[in-house]
Length: 393
Image (cartoon, rainbow, N blue to C red; front, side, top):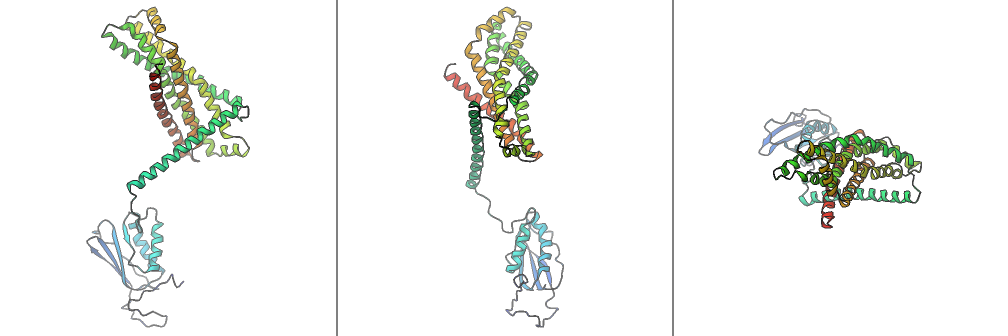
């Protein structure tokens, strides 16, 4: 208790319970004095066992810079600490600079701890802002942690796939069939609509340019190769990212929030086998099928544009399409569509398995899954296009 109720006697004489003092000379008081950098709170008198008000700082103080001068403070107790805290806490909350170095050591420690616990405490003991290298290091550390989490998840999926191939997986065939039904047939309407509209745009804009050179007969080549090789797979990937990947993240994220994933692990069921593997295999199966369906829709709308608008005969368009449609173009389109579908499944399951345990975290994971899937699709599309072109495929 002696350390808490500290006394500072400028004259060097210790106060005692029997020492006689001049009450008028030791009356507690405080006043604000403005200076060029802000203002100074001067404390004087004996505050032990007495109470006095500390007025608000002058309105002209600069940028919240406050310094405390306690050279004339005779004695103090917890009452002064409470009074100063009530006056200085609003300044700390508004990011003011409060200099406590002029206070006695015990009082300074008490106020520093109290102000540091404020919701947005000022820099009572402010650290210097991190330099550029520190910020770069923090960014690299966070990025590597995210990459490591992704690589770990991919490794777990590969191990799960290996267990399934050896017949030791916890995945049920009914779960796989359910996921195929949810991701395949239920995605056909939106895939058909998107591929129809985008195919219409490609066919119409391409035909408008070819008509300037009298080359309407090449509309079939343009639409067939473009839709089968690139457009259908890309559209299917984006549609699956918005419809299926988000659903995967929300479903698994909700299970994490409800501790159902932890319950599976407690019962000895591998969550990756039970939750992730059926979804990945389902999109691995339906991805090429949806890509082929989207390509057929795009070729059909190209036929409508060429025949109804630009006067190409129906048989001529079909014949030109068959001539342009080679096995290489078909395989390239199916490979891309399958790759995009698997990426969507991995992104959705990764974000779901990494989600926090609140509604806000599940929503964030759902959004992140769509963004991550689309980014992955664009990156892989660029890489595959360059690779296939280099291989002359």
